[in-house]
Image 1 (cartoon, protein in one colour):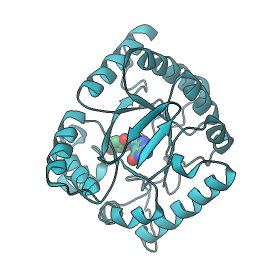
Image 2 (cartoon, protein in one colour):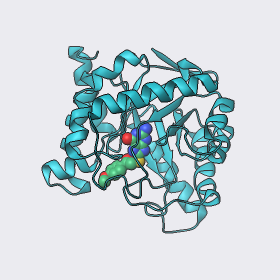
Image 3 (tube, helix red, strand yellow):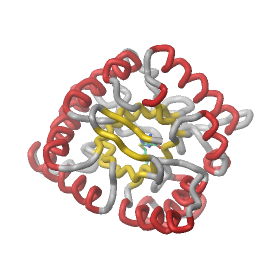
Image 4 (cartoon, helix red, strand yellow):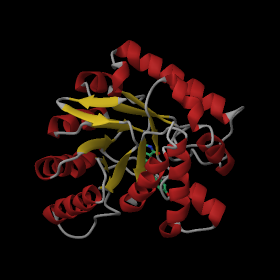
Length: 276
Ligand code: YH5
């Protein structure tokens, strides 16, 4: 399996590590505009040196309970950072957004992948992604970030998420997204209880038959906080265990904060070839 974006190619024979770069004010609030861009660039540089082949840039907080970010603010946060990373680093750039205007501006600035936790369901997003003609990650989310963690329920979480992804990938293909440009994501923590998250993680291999590469994002999420009673900065071991399970079940892109450690885990698995 190979991803293509413009002239670039990324092999998915072995899992690729996607490093998370938050450009929300909570992460880079001190200093002026240039300091913020410099800080984002140096963090991205560190992630690439540690072995990330993709940097996922997000300017909207989709953590449970988060408020919506205004369009202009999101554009001002992400576009200059994409331009700088494009100039300075050798990596793929992914834009974590749900807004059509941000998708278009980000791809024009050099983003290689559109990563949308709302699976292109916002106004204009599907058209923007078709026109951008780059790989897109379609994620399952039940409800909206503000309320999604209030008593999420499913008849059968694996079946329901799988059906959603089948339907949504079909709709996107009908609208003009190329099948080879689709990545799917089970959406850990987005409208799921602790049990839902682990049921889904353990069913990752059941999504391989859809025929699209699977992206997994469990890094530092509440599923480990709840299970292990750890705060957000003490979830590394849990997150690595989650990455092992995802990779062994065939996930090809692992979205993480802790790149160096996840690359080590991937290389150990590579030696015993436990990838599907
Ligand atoms: C994802 O899974 N997640 S943003 C809460 C946390 C820790 C981390 C409470 N964008 C995903 O990373 N894109 C986000 O602790 C994503 N898949 C894809 N494709 C949320 C996040 C986080 C939230």
